[in-house]
Amino acid sequence: MTILAVSNLSKSFGGLHALSDVSFTVAQGEIVGLIGPNGAGKSTLFSTLMGLHRPNGGAVELAGRPVAGRKPHVIAAMGMTKTFQNVSLFTESSVLDNVLIGGLLHSGVAEARAEAMACLRRVGLTDIADRAAGSLSFPERARVEVARALCTRPKLLLLDEVMAALNTAEMDDLLGLIRQLRGEGLTLLVVEHHMRAIMSVCDRVLVLNFGKLIADGSPADIARDPDVVRAYLGREYAE
Ligand SMILES: Nc1ncnc2c1ncn2[C@@H]1O[C@H](COP(=O)(O)OP(=O)(O)O)[C@@H](O)[C@H]1O
Ligand SMILES: [Mg+2]
Image: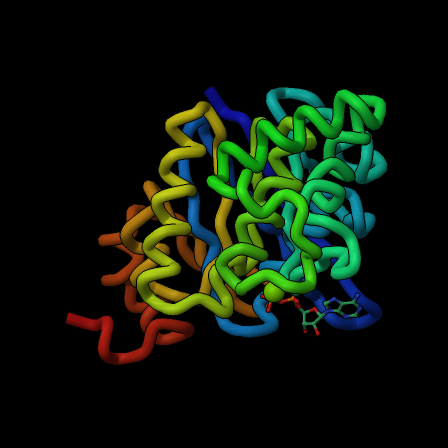
């Protein structure tokens, strides 16, 4: 079943075409990677899907229902949530309070608090629920971001560079969490710079370059695609 269908989506900032006629689908249960050079439009795609930018054209359907033009909280309530590229936690507040914000989308505070604890359990952070978010390590912050997104009850989760500051071992742990979430029934669309991470966790990879989708295929096909190698991967990936 198709959970996300994006058709001819375009977004301009003044004269800059950040997204040009982007079309792709994501099937339920897939982990799909989204890669491309800096400034390619990856974060803009996520923000436009979430209703944070109004598209200049095109359509987005989530589980068959149109979402383009709706407000972000409505889209979140329909089952799509994203993390933010630069971690956006309230540093003075506790981990639990940061996560329960996600739950306020659909519940009162008491219920959101219980759900936040359940989400912290899913990401393996129950023991730090009372710590101030500003005191966390990078891998802990990444997991809190994911827990907060989970607290909105997504079917489709968009992760924007959650591994940015992680070392190899920490990245492997987070890849384990991504696989676990898929096992729990989630579908994931993942922006990441680390090619090893993308290639190991994704069923399929989309490649953006200057706002255009230049490839959509298996990790193995993407690594061999001459256009992708030229635009992004560099010669070391060409075999
Ligand atoms: N709010 C904005 N206003 C104007 N230009 C923007 C805005 N957001 C992104 N851009 C521009 O759109 C292009 C794509 O940016 P972005 O989506 O952040 O790329 P990526 O996430 O792939 O690095 C860049 O040229 C960026 O400068
Ligand atoms: Mg970005």
